[in-house]
Length: 206
Image 1 (cartoon, rainbow, N blue to C red):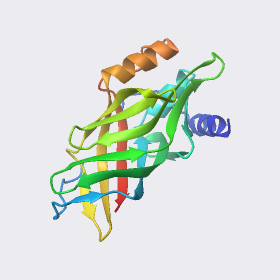
Image 2 (image 1 turned 45 degrees about the horizontal axis):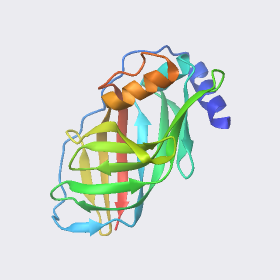
Image 3 (image 1 turned 120 degrees about the vertical axis):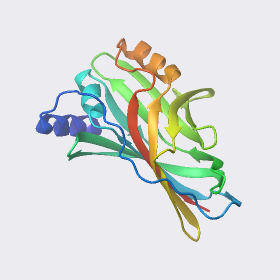
Image 4 (image 1 turned 90 degrees about the horizontal axis):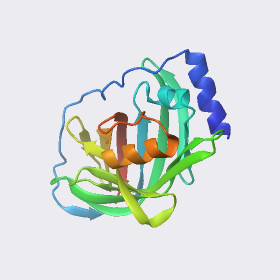
């Protein structure tokens, strides 16, 4: 509940109204020099909402909050309120040269309308780098997974270290499956397929 209050306070201080979602800022794409496949042992993926998204959710009574071991925070920048979520990487593999791989995470995001008693949980995210999609378990069920975000590496940058790789500037757009589930849960037309939710960056250790 502290996160609910914190995000609401930040939005109120900013004095914002929901507006169009701005696209993620562009950066030149590059690839790591190595084409070998590595096993992932840790790291974290961070998702930052695009301008207008947090305010639009709050304006419709919907508060997004991270579930453990994920974390969240809220800030005010030039584009308004942004909510940032971070989730630990628990395993997977990556071929940075070919941009293929699968990245597993723990934690999730609970979307909740507390007064209305409505909520939906998406968690245990899996990124398929080569398919360009992030899938999630729904309401804690390992049997029910849905494509949540489509991923774009068009403006991504890749930096390779000795035992780590950082990929930043990954574009996130909402899938039609996720949009339908969210709108059905909350009785809104707020969530549209292709909605630009924000950007992601991931640090992968191996």
